[in-house]
Length: 120
Image 1 (tube, one colour):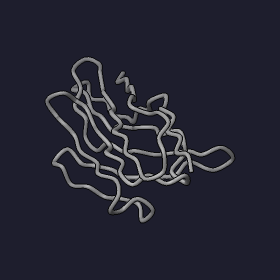
Image 2 (cartoon, one colour; image 1 turned 90 degrees about the vertical axis):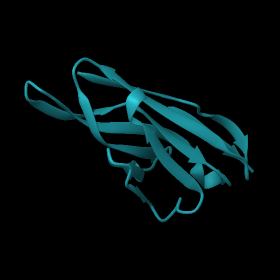
Image 3 (cartoon, rainbow, N blue to C red; image 1 turned 30 degrees about the vertical axis):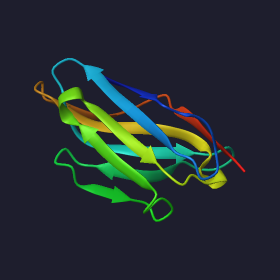
Image 4 (cartoon, rainbow, N blue to C red; image 1 turned 30 degrees about the horizontal axis):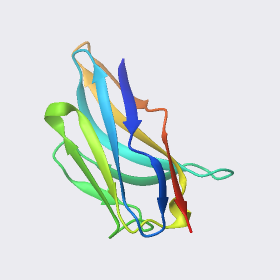
């Protein structure tokens, strides 16, 4: 199994910034693509951004130019730098990771989420 833990959420004013982290842990695994999603109350989960093991990134239109996804493969950690935050960015942010082991086995793991609240 691969476990993911998000951190860095909090309360911030509109126009402010936050940096989220997602750390992967386990035994004898390799992480491939990692993703950020978010889910606001009463809404479906929305894809935000992803990053491949080689560092190629993709963003949803709603966050392009404001958010930056990155990763440190040596630490098995992914980051989401969130700038110029808007109230509509308020949501629980979840990370996910596509992983493999030598067994062979593959799968996708999800973190529990971290709350981001942006006030007007």
